[in-house]
Length: 100
Image (cartoon, rainbow, N blue to C red; front, side, top):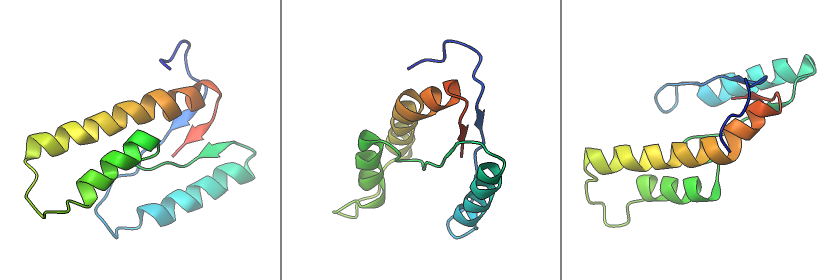
């Protein structure tokens, strides 16, 4: 669902390496917004949709252990993001939700 009007929600992205505390900080910020009366949606990338979770599984669990080429990994991440934006993020922003 493309954005049809100026969204009233907020999108806040957390970046960092594994084990850097992103999940902890997301939970703390979500609690802050919820105490302030805002609806909050936390999601992950890749993932957050059925297709995104399948892509995540491909990226994380390569059964043969073969090295995935950089272009393949980039396109898989991009595909997962496109699905997440269309199915989850854009509709939530249009409803005024804070998306983390």
